[in-house]
Amino acid sequence: MRPIVSVRNLSKCYYVGRPRNNSPTLREAFVGAISSPLAHLRDRRNGAGDPLWVLKDISFDVAPGEVLASSAVTVPANQRF
Image 1 (cartoon, helix red, strand yellow):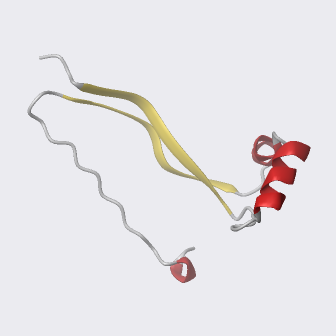
Image 2 (spheres, one colour):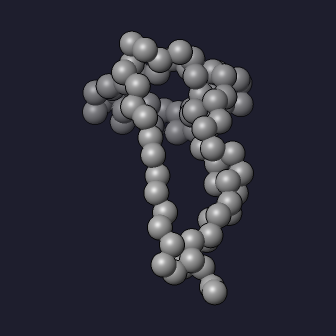
Image 3 (spheres, helix red, strand yellow):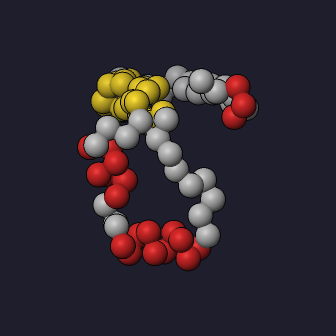
């Protein structure tokens, strides 16, 4: 039977330890985007933060009649790493 959902090579990576401003003002966000539109890519190239792969190269199919479930745990900020 042909799958109704097909996912190939799904990956998700977080960079742990990279400093960031969690709540920039609208002005700060706008100025940052205009002055350095590719800064987030440069930060990754320069090794800012350690990579934490939560998903890496996951592939799956979901056939008609099958159920797909997802689960996540939310950890308070004061209990992370």
